[in-house]
Length: 408
Image (cartoon, rainbow, N blue to C red; front, top):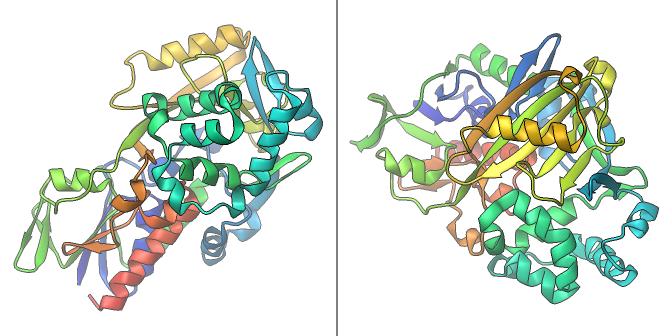
């Protein structure tokens, strides 16, 4: 049977790899390269992700994928430090001493925040799907903790949608990032970057006889006589990894509208380090970006021969046409960077970078099979209430298992 996989991101590639031994698989990817948000670009002698990535110690499905691809030995573990930029300087917030010295919160407020962080992993998330993160934090930690600590994070991540983001997302986010020691949270990154995972999956799919067509957006589909036509070609089954409402707009079955947001990442090669050794710096002050991610305060600088940072910005709809100019100008002024210290810049934009986990999101998650179609992606249950590479691997494996179980 011929199966069409719409989308060549991590989830689609995992599903295709699981099925190529049994079926005639064809992947349609609208971008010129595979990987989706895990895609990379080449810079001199190395590959670098368009959007910053790392994995976590509990990502067991992702580790199994690395084992299968023969890449486990290349995974390295580092510590990710965090901080906040305010009043013109970086305040490190990694160690207990640094947090205690942070001037924006009182000692009592810091104690409440620490207790929530410790408890986050054991909190039942189901009832929090209907509660806003704003309401939850103000009720438990007070208005000041929300305004000084959480509101800037939510604003930079979700913009105007921040007041409708669920507490389930926020607590999940806190829990996944609470596995930390004195040097910061333990995070994984492969020597050579995540492009090696994408390349290895592509090789296995092609070697097994699968077909991959990049630069091929899906422009139309319809159901006829028990089969699907996609771009005028017939398939016995379709696995879609793109937002469900997008598929409905081109002839697919009706689907709940899951809100998505876009992302811009401006990667910059630099002559020197600019965040005082901190990996992840959240912007408390208003800026054209919500965070500065110093990649080479995480992965070793010697892998690249220069310092690398990302400026991360999220948006709804379309980004401002001059977003790169605005981000770079603000960054140079705020962090006192001279033009000659910048080696290169690379802007990546994705208008549908990921779901916004608003209240009631859980009830709109589509099943793996609905209306004669298979669905899996960042919107699937393994990626709720926080998307990750682990969730995409699990969703891709789950939907492949669903196809195999039905014998289709």
